Image 1 (tube, rainbow, N blue to C red):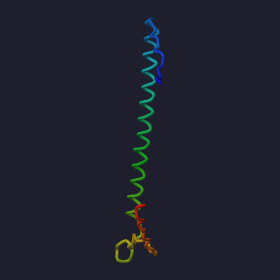
Image 2 (image 1 turned 45 degrees about the horizontal axis):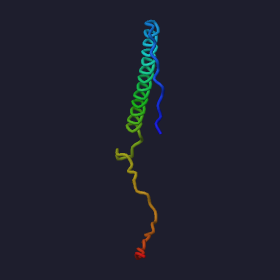
Image 3 (image 1 turned 90 degrees about the vertical axis):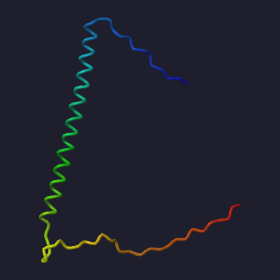
Image 4 (image 1 turned 60 degrees about the vertical axis):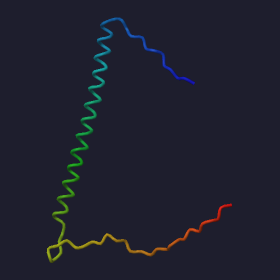
Length: 90
């Protein structure tokens, strides 16, 4: 099954062509400005988050020896080993 749209008829009137060109350029311009605004907000927000994290790490409380208290990155817990049995081919 083939899906096809009918070909749009281009207007022969020069004023309608010029107006449609201007409308198309305006839509593209608005989309570009919107994209730039979104990109700018993301860039500024990312820079602020990065700066706040960097600043908070510098001003974090330190131990008496002058070093940060070591926080282990290991989660304590128990584990169980499960053995998978192989079934013979039928």
